[in-house]
Length: 249
Image (cartoon, rainbow, N blue to C red; front, side, top):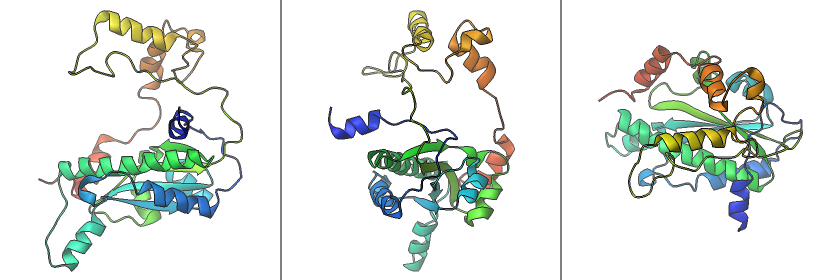
């Protein structure tokens, strides 16, 4: 395999164990210059990236602490400002613009993570920015209320210890479809469950689900993990998207 594929295959998530080692500013600039090369709709890059260098600010934003962090936001303000400056009346609104902007944003974010890994920098993607009162994100980094939504944060740094293994990934029936979409058969589902149960595949979030009294790993996942912890209230998420204009028609 070539170097790029090796880099992608070596990606892993660092959870709560970033060391005190700092990411060099030179590497940060390389990541930023590289990630904006990601594909985007109509060459307009409908996103903004807020660079956070203060560890305490990172913790306040997402609950984790690393050397640096990149807050990726769906954002049309720069585009609308240019439009108005030129005398045009372009207004981004509606769910279609939000989906397009989200796609642009995530492509840039994933490219940043790959670039960081190629530089030996570890990372964590987190939606912790959407836990609790999401308005704190707008306040802490002064995001505009209209045309902007904080989508994902990428925390960067160096793990204080390397993982003992890389998690596996499912790529069988129900995920990859040949020519047309096909629902899983009963046998497909049984094979899928068996793959998650296979300790050599290391596909689950925990490895000791049997000790917790579950027949299958996915029993633990659906019964104990889904719904666990603090999640954004539906009303809060809808109100923020409505305020931003992404629910207008």
